[in-house]
Image 1 (spheres, one colour):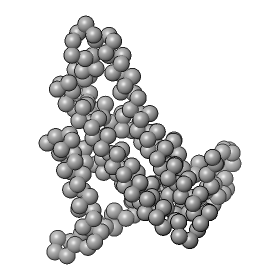
Image 2 (cartoon, rainbow, N blue to C red; image 1 turned 90 degrees about the vertical axis):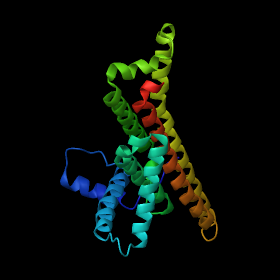
Image 3 (tube, rainbow, N blue to C red; image 1 turned 90 degrees about the horizontal axis):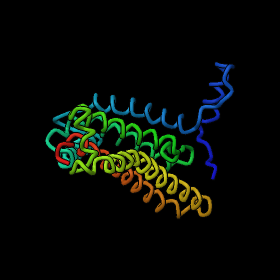
Image 4 (cartoon, rainbow, N blue to C red; image 1 turned 45 degrees about the vertical axis):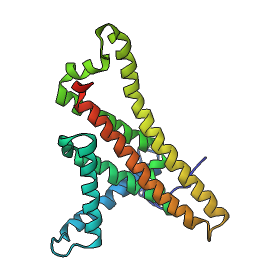
Length: 235
């Protein structure tokens, strides 16, 4: 099913083709939307940081503080006492995915997470990061050793199985996020087109819930993978 493009697709590509004539391809809409997510984040959070007040915190500050504390608690529970060092990467995933998902509530935008190129890029980033942290923490040989299973004579078989299972996490993370957001966005668009007055309201509520849920699932799985990587000696 072909999605409609966002309101930025035509003007951005018109500008793109006006400044260059060598390349004839268009900038994909999901790339434009992902750049918009980054732009919004680069504007909102620096502005919010300037208005931080210990004496009279505003509603946005309360929300941000609760979110950060919630992520810290999750990292502590899932990864362990040292989990707080991963707050920045987990927070970046959470902000990008949530804002991307919320784009699906606006008819003139397209959620970049409804495109598999975006979700698999996020999944690959998560995969590379937790494996890097595992190698950094345990050392390359020791990290690879835990893929071999508990007994040495099963090492050849278990190593192949564990490596395949490890790479399958990219597919799992990418397809889960893409499938859910694409499905929700498509269903909302269909119902909004059929009954544009009443039906979109509960669909929007469901969309907000789905945006939060899918963000939580992605970061929680990333935390679990990080926990297994940095604690490889316990396997």
